[in-house]
Image 1: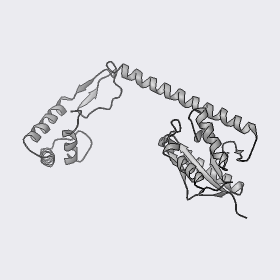
Image 2: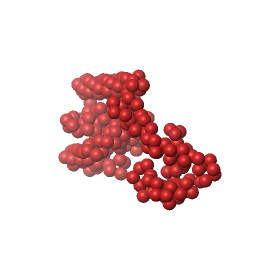
Image 3: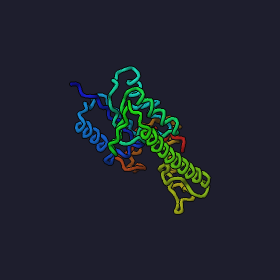
Length: 244
C-alpha cells in the first residue's frame, strides 16, 4: 500500500536563526513525525524560506511556499498529502483574512496540515468548526505580533533619524573618521585625511590605482585597515567612494 506523501515546510524570517538550532529542529521534527505516522517524507522537494518574512506574504509571492501552492494547483502534490510545519505562523503572518484564506485554500485542495509543535492535524475533509476557530486565533495573534514589532522598529528608527544632528546612528564610518565620545559627531583623523588628499592628487596627475598602491607600499605607508599593504582595488574603492 502506498503511503501518503508528506512535505516539510521550514521558514525563518532571518538567517541569523541558522546560527542557532532552528533549521535542524524543524527538519528533525518533520522526519520524526513522518516516521511515527507512516508518511513518505519527500526530501527532494525541499520547502525552505530562509530569511523570508511571512508578514508581507513574500514567502507566498516569491518563496518556497508559493511554489508549493503552485505544485498543489498543478497536481504535482497529490490529494491526501500532508504539509508539515512547526506552527501555523510559519505559513503566514499576514492579515487574518488573508492568512486564513491561505490556510483554507491548502485544505480545500486536499492537503492536510500538521503543526508539529503540538502535533495537531488539520484534515482536508474535516467539518470540525474548532479547526477553523483555532487557525483564525493563531494566525490573528501572529499578525498582531508582527504588526506590533514592525511599528516598534519603525518608530525606533524614526527617532534615531530625528536625532541625527545630536546623536549618530552608528559608530561605523569611513576609515578617515572617528566617532567622538557621546556619539554626537564625527571628527577627521588628520594624517589619514592628508593621505586621502595625496591619493586624489596622484590620481589627478594621471597615475592609476596600481601605481599609487605600489608607491605607498614602497614608502612603507601603513594602510587604513589591517592588511598586507595597499592594494589596487582598495585605492580604486577610495577614489570612487561618495563618502569622500
